[in-house]
Length: 292
Image 1 (cartoon, one colour):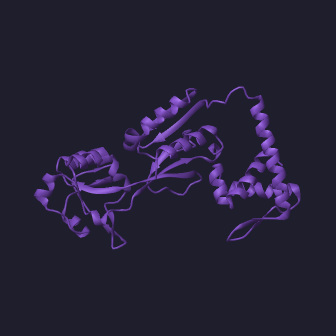
Image 2 (tube, rainbow, N blue to C red; image 1 turned 180 degrees about the vertical axis):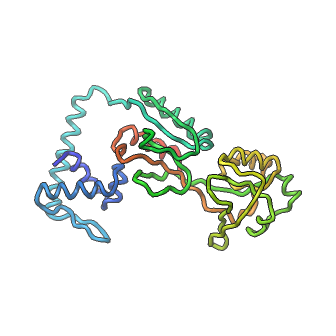
């Protein structure tokens, strides 16, 4: 039996299920389940009753939880008694963040976080490629969009609205699109990493994929925004890339009733980093600053 198992057990009881407990502890659900099975095996008693609807605590589990909580409280008091000061986060930490969102929003947050923890050393890589977290030694990555299935642990941070927009000059020349099908007659500036020509919009609650084309394809949002500002066509981008241009009137939002689904902003990290104090602190900091 390990002290960590006691902490997991108490958290499971308070959270009411393995999923919520795993999220609070920043552990995988599978790991929490394995540790609880090991704890029950070491004690030789059933502590928790699991079914599809809820989790309940056995009589033995209730008795054990009171003793476990006392042990954890005693350990916490002992740690406080011998600690002269709060332990400071320190060490190297490698982070991958997307280029546009990183420069606009994450860069000042990282600077603020490091000012709070001066013993940390961050290595920050900006780019829109999906890095090999384990092979390249990254501790955490911030990603935008659909995540592929992997062994990485993901934490949702926010959602990013997307808009279709163009310059007033382009609208005057090409006319206002009124329905998604109208895009087929327009120049559409496409984001290239999606690996497809289509734009997927929502029409009457259903997804509609349109095979659009235009004079430029790029994997960088600023390049596409600048092309739209130059009057080259319509662009579909996250709002944070074009919000200043929209406010200034140099870009105009169109087809607002058919906007695509927002993109999900997530943090991902390897299994072996889930108990890192720096990972915990950095994620908590981002969740506080980036409101969904």
